[in-house]
Length: 281
Image 1 (cartoon, helix red, strand yellow):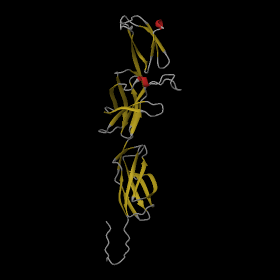
Image 2 (cartoon, helix red, strand yellow):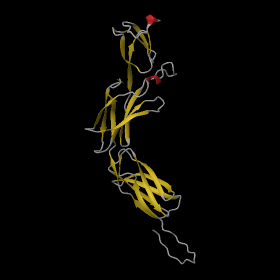
Image 3 (cartoon, one colour):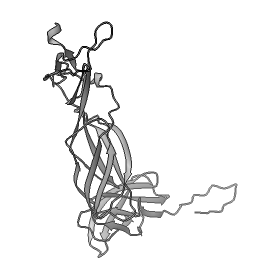
Image 4 (cartoon, helix red, strand yellow):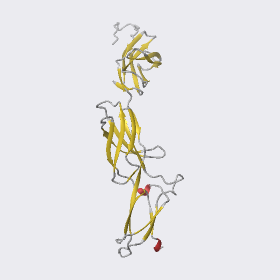
């Protein structure tokens, strides 16, 4: 802290000494191929003063040079970490006008985390069905957090988060199970005649999130079922009746009710279906 002494009845000018208070990384460790931020804090350094930042690896090799200007005694500079960086990076900050220099403590660098083969075990799914989600992981540090996020796909990119939960990496692999549940109303799914794009089935994907790295799976498509029952005006079953279903994607299915006047059609496109009984038209 700068200190000065003077009589109270006199005007005295003092030049306060400039200094670099801290140079540090915004995290203690990072992955090669990602980014980290160098933070610079100063005292009594004028706005627009030039700041030179040099980033070197453990061998002293220069990785990056940046020239910036500082404002309000603070500068934060994002640094891209090359994918072939060694075990650490050091930031050296210089204020040439003020003749000041300071180095940061080392930033530990881990090999880049890689995620691959992110996939469902099925292409389609029904209500209440158990899905297996798997992914291969490389260079994932022990004790770090992994997260699974499941989204309902939106063609315009406004994907809706369905759920998220932690995952454990064992032997460079993630494997979890999830019970599918469609929480929406199938009546809200546009039929093939409702939009220019035609029928768009509900599709879901999951994201494996490992620290700063993530990778998305392909899609699993939701398939639904319909239960058909026919009764007369008195509530009596009408068995063995032929039916025809107009499905939301524009396709049709035909069948016949059983002796209990019921039928179940499975693995149909999710959405609102229309059932007619041809012999009763």
